[in-house]
Image 1 (cartoon, rainbow, N blue to C red):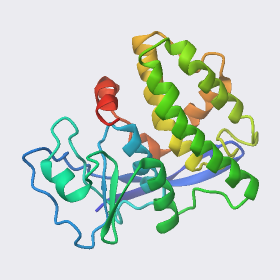
Image 2: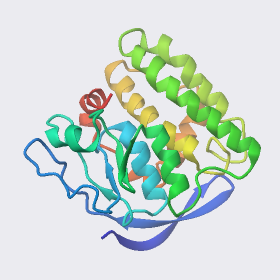
Image 3: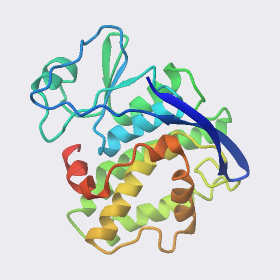
Image 4: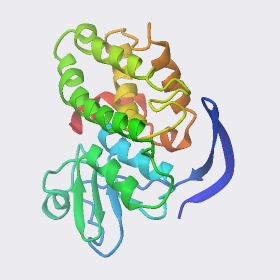
Length: 251
């Protein structure tokens, strides 16, 4: 069971949010010689990989909503995957996957919406219709950003291929100017859908190509800084040394 410690105050633009710090023991990833958990026994399980940005989106959502005791982490070793994961859990054989109510659900951007709407905890989509519409359109943009431009940039000119999309993020952060997040002072699924890929790309681009994605993008720089004050995100960050190989393994 996750242990809760004293609450901490984190500045979010003009709004101060209160977060409970959770000390959670992270289980060892399961590999090819590991036995499967007792599947479909009523336990809700999230199957991530600790260094996969796709799985990280769902992990952040789970953490922010305080679902540490409601959704059990069952990490998978992507370099040495257990055969039962494809055979008995998720036949696509990728992470993340969620076992809930006798079924398996995949796809990270679908899962963050599913967890937000089907579990207790603070809502991560706003009530304001304009902000909600923007958030949903932005999440769709992130899907195309991940699957097209950023991935293609690994095979071409990084600055040329990815630069315009990071300019788009910088401009999007001006839409609601009452705070540092994409919806202003409201931390939301728009931030969660984006941050694992932005910081992964930031690490890779600075290491491999000496390219800092925050140069000339002050809003983006502040957004990253503010997100790194949120425990629900910080506790999901992987060792940068394994980011490249893990990133390639989970896509």
